[in-house]
Image (tube, rainbow, N blue to C red):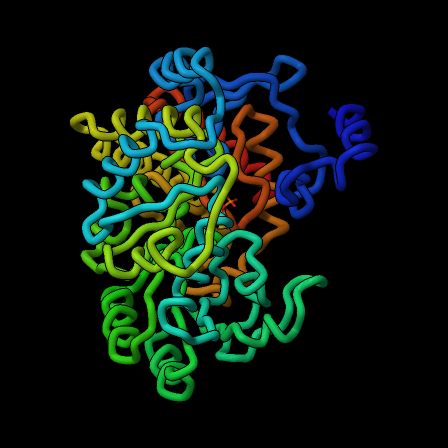
Length: 424
Ligand SMILES: Cc1ncc(COP(=O)(O)O)c(C=O)c1O
């Protein structure tokens, strides 16, 4: 793999097209994948791994699902991009609107980043306000306004999280901790008149998995409504994964706008944002808030999304996802306990994180004190044993309907050995 990585680094910054793939926080050389099927990936040297990254979430039905592959093969011969409406867009939009209560209209884009960026612009256009409140540790793609210092655990003015983001823009973003109703109340009471939106992952997924505490999402809904602030749920990770209607149906809290990505494209580049008819009526061409995309609603991407959502509509799918998630959690917890390694798991259905720390992990600060060195050692011990986990402590493991008992038993056995090895 080293030679491949060296070659990639000659032509691609850091050798990767998205930074976390470079193994920076665990060390070593990234796995170059040649092919993937079901819950398994095969690297360029022919070594097979059980995959718990699933392309960071989209592959909920497993890699190269025969139905998705057949749909794509059928579509590719009909043309790959039209730049004019095709009915596949309506087909996927109808499925989204029917599954997610409160979404009357949905606009497709090509990535999760585009979805959150567009939703924030819409919220600003709709409210006529400029400021944004985000949550420390929530990631919404590399949108300028949302890429402020997420490490801050306190209410603060945004600080640029990356060179290239003007301070004037970052200064419009206020960061508060997750699961902290008081912090939200304070920021809204002090600045509510200037705040366009609160954007959050309803289940934190990018500081590792961190579920909302009971009542937290309800408080977000109530307080934002009180202050005329648009509530945006970023369900790029959780949408169609944690329940048919995502976190909003799981917890019964309805935001004004919701963002999707990953699963909705079934492994093709798709994002989406949607909401009620009134707010979505402000998007061009119905309204004045401009947003567009040459490849938006791409027919291949729509086909993969339609097929994936149809697979998820089959009976028993979410029960199965819950079962495989629970089994993986059990395997990790047993292995840690037997080896005497301090660890805890946060899980919602088929997404989970095993944290190397006592926990509980309820926000970014609690996640940040976990033992990342130990995670790196565990990651490599698992990789050696043919288990491909996310190359960072602060990510989720994603399971799919393709994970079965055989794979989960093999993973639990590997976890036992790996925990013993890192406990020494
Ligand atoms: C919650 C959330 N929002 C937005 C994004 C950005 O999506 P994309 O990488 O497709 O731009 C991600 C990506 O991981 C995400 O997890």
